[in-house]
Length: 67
Picture 1 (cartoon, one colour):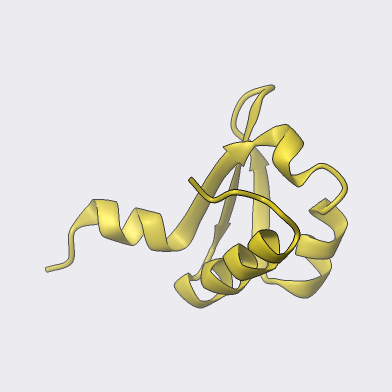
Picture 2 (tube, helix red, strand yellow):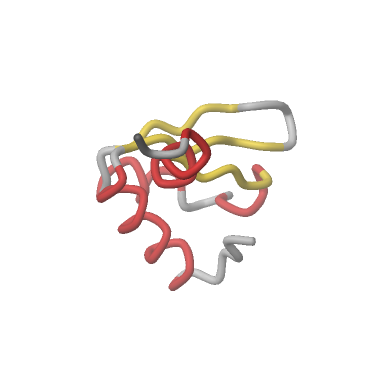
């Protein structure tokens, strides 16, 4: 049985809201993900492991740190 934390890590990205400022439309157009406002300062990008991996690479190419 897989660890819940590993599944969670592979299906979501939590970032400061300003990190994806200006990229929301591209993320929505290019990937099958949902962008959820966690708080005023943070957002959660949710999708399948494949889409999250692709979105992570996209964000990294646009200078967004995934740490």
